[in-house]
Image 1 (cartoon, rainbow, N blue to C red):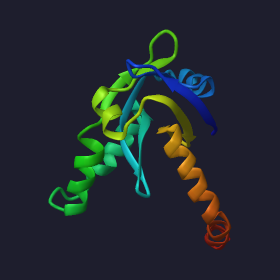
Image 2: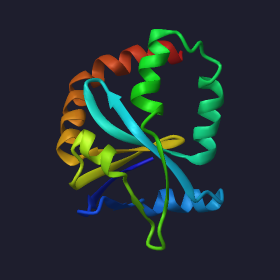
Image 3: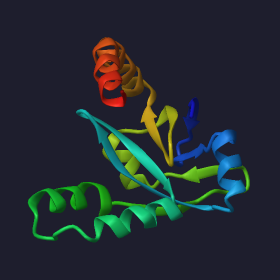
Image 4: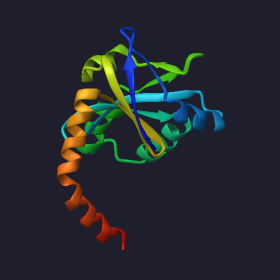
Length: 148
């Protein structure tokens, strides 16, 4: 869990926050998969530890290839995915193609989300928070019903 404001340098490197690095180290994970993601109509990157990505792919591979939704999902999410590792300073190099597609540079926010984490442009993340805040009361009621 957590929100971590970070900086992405002009080479596309950004630090994996220490709490996330520590959790990955406990599980002896040093390889990550980064790809495009979209929440609502806002773009970000999502990063999975390699074992979680492999688990996801085993499920995805069981879906019918000719389904238009499967094909669209594959083209946006799976096809551009790339394996990355952390350097000795705990940074990852976000591939240029992925950075450019969503306009990442400078200030970013790393958001931990269960078994994965997302990297948002800081300005886009501010919009996500604003939108979420506006819907919070309604979402809280709906979730309370689902969880009861």
